[in-house]
Length: 398
Image 1: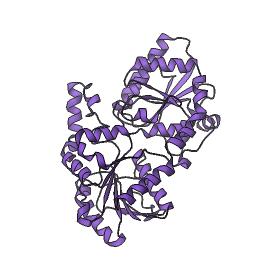
Image 2: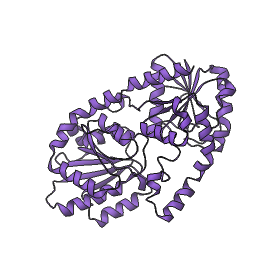
Image 3: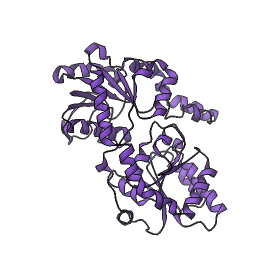
Image 4: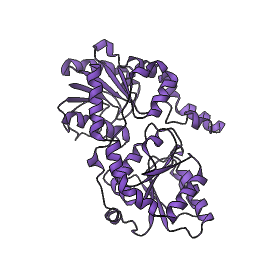
């Protein structure tokens, strides 16, 4: 098949779950003999070749790297029509909201859309988050996400036009059907996966040695953009309560990887609780070091306050053999089960403190789960099964 994939950004634009998923999907399809043309925004790195890992790159002229804007949505449909004359596409597959203005009927090509969360599910506008905001925070959220309200009619039209809608989780499926129940027949659930080579198994001691981390201390790890909705403040609060209530708690180090505007608030919280020797901020972690950080950790903590459509970081951690403590929010419960982790109510510092106390005092909780993590991730979220299932969707709509 000749496949047109659309994504606003790829790993050479910025590092993120959607970016790597799109690239690894394109690679998997290419390895199976399909021709993949990847339409994206302008490429900032002049060293990136037009054929990238066997994938034909077609940046939309005049667009801003990795960003949706008026120029992108005004020109994407016409640009795909032009490319179709050259490549004769069998199917167009959009990641996220990239195909808001694409009309498949105009070029007589079926449109497949993968929704990695709805317009509002991973924002402060999600119902469960919105209800907990102050008036000031609600006003800020409305202003910050005002463009999403303008795009809502286009988003609904895109889903109606699509021949198939792929979702990562049952959670996202239910969110779509709350708004447009008539779409049930065209929604296909295909969980995300990760190319196994990107997160190979790494020995914990070797990983800690390479990163200069202590080998005799329990390490807790979180990574992501530092924003209030990521819930890292809940972990810091839980650690404070844990130390206050349990003075003889074993030694630990909490590593918070990533950058963002909320770091100042988190750092202030750490200082106020006198946790400077217990919490580390290494900043943005490179793609090459990320598997080492996951492998060096005893537990990965995912304290998300929004409603994630999947939570790819949990899968990354499991691939590296590290159990997960995750907030019971969005699709996270669909990724973690008791054999590889544990859930807690989002934002509940007391519940999280109780879990951490149990794990720190009973390290066998970790040693029982570590050997299960990678096999669980490889089997339940198989990369090759994901590629096969998406291939099948293409065959069904053509």
